[in-house]
Image (tube, rainbow, N blue to C red; front, side, top):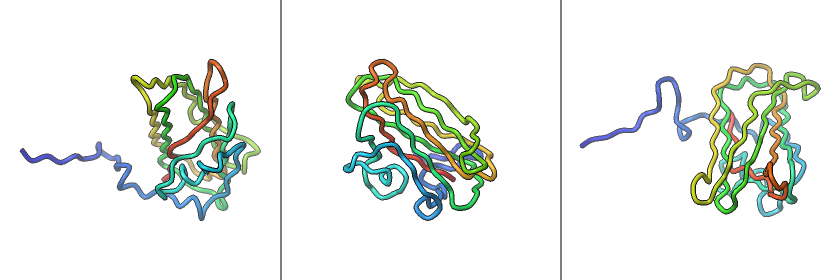
Length: 156
């Protein structure tokens, strides 16, 4: 039998998408960073493991674009293979450098080593004149002692 996997109508696969070069287009502000798991691991296709905070608790990552951007797709991937926890994240965008912001998504997800170890949010958007994106992660709704992490954040 011959088979071929194709993307859903009108949607490009993750591998064939033309992702933005965030290293050249944006400055990153973040509240914490483990030196062994820097933010470049999540933002750039460089083979490094994703980002992880240096201390537990709520964390924020903010992308400040050098020039306003038009965005049509946002991909976020979070992985937690070891601990059971309920994470919440919020993603906001700004047309004015962060002076005001608009919610895109707020999501809770429960990780479980015996079941769900990965959360992927693949958002099709139509955002114009984006000057800033801010991701806030509350890594554990219950105990608050978990470390925030982000495996992948891509924009197109």
